[in-house]
Image (cartoon, rainbow, N blue to C red):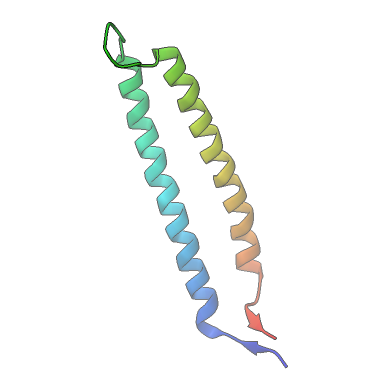
Length: 88
């Protein structure tokens, strides 16, 4: 016996949209961080401060990981829209 859950697909779509919104927020933060990195000049300090090049390498890693997550989520979105949510 299968029972279709009428609100479950709507809830799944809402959760997916929350994920997309969170990824958009992180992307905006990374864009802002990139602007800060480009103005970073380093200099003498008592703290160990990474160079601008090191920061850009880490920034690129973050952006690449976020884009990878976004691509995976996009594939999930198609499956989510195509699926009929039921309980067996």
